Amino acid sequence: MPQHLVVSISGHGFGHVAQTAPALNLLLTHMPQLRLTVRSTVPLSHLRSRIHAPFEHLHSEGDIGMVMFSAVDILVDESRATYRAFHENWDARVAGEARLLRELDADMVLSNVGYLPLAGAQRMGIPNIALCSLNWFDIYRHYCGNDAVAAQICDCYASADAFLRITPGLSMAHLPNLVPITPVADIGNNRRAEINLRLKLSRKEKLVLVSLGGIASRLPIERWPRIEGVRWLVQGDWQVEHPDAIAIESLPMNFSDLLASSDALICKPGYGSFVEAACSGTPVLYVSRDDWPETPILSGWLRQHGLCREISRNALEQGSFAGELEEICNAPRPKPVIPEGAGQTAGWITERLRG
Image 1 (cartoon, rainbow, N blue to C red):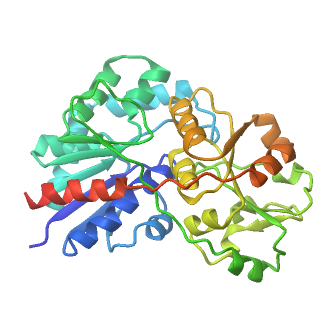
Image 2 (tube, rainbow, N blue to C red):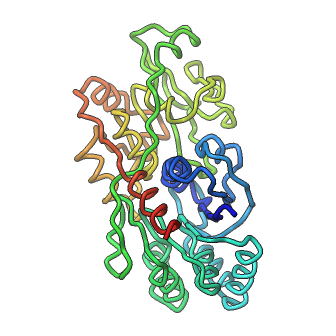
């Protein structure tokens, strides 16, 4: 009977999918008979656009993340209340998770990076692994303090068989089971010639991808002044009314290909956006997000390995960053990063599954 890997992927932005999918795609080349179930609140269409191996899907909330007001604003009080409600009947919640994993007949649980699936697996004696550049213990503790909820979260991660900590990421020095992993990214193909032909763009025009990484939010691009020779790739559901805006969905390409084909990316600090841009050689303009614990780590890594400039939130909302955009588009591009973390992760999991 094929072994069954149950994978939980956080719906707190698309970065968790970006970290997990490349490893799963490689894993299934090593173990083509492996049965795969993906549990997530991320839209199934996005999961299938990233995970190319066949998988069963279960809509599931394995973690809370943080309650967000926008892509960069956290509602701290609401987050604290949500966590306390989630942990109020913690033992019963873990018991329910354990029953579900038993019903699924899971041989291993991989979580990025919900801790409830890990706790359920630990209750059942099922091998369990965390994979991420962050963990919700450090995030929760940063905003809400080091209380009983934080202690329960930390215990789940510390009790896993391993925490595969992806680079760049939080240090997690408090975890005894840490396994460092190099960067993970899905590198797209540069299809710019095809895009220019489809959109009737000249070779001199700049194509800038605008993305907030899967958190429900929107930029007021209608306010942005026109910049000669610049076109904006934006989400179709933003319904942007700007003469230079192009809906991403109008191009039959995945996000990685669009990123690799763009002259620049405008985004918030996030693992998927920053690392994929560095691996594709695409310059980045990013908005400040000073209170998020990952920001100094991610931005420091990108400054070292990629090409980026920080802009203020006001500049982003008003579109007043033409000088910074011209600067990074015309600057020499560094050598792209080669991501080897997906192979390391797939190899690590394969070895454990084969015993």
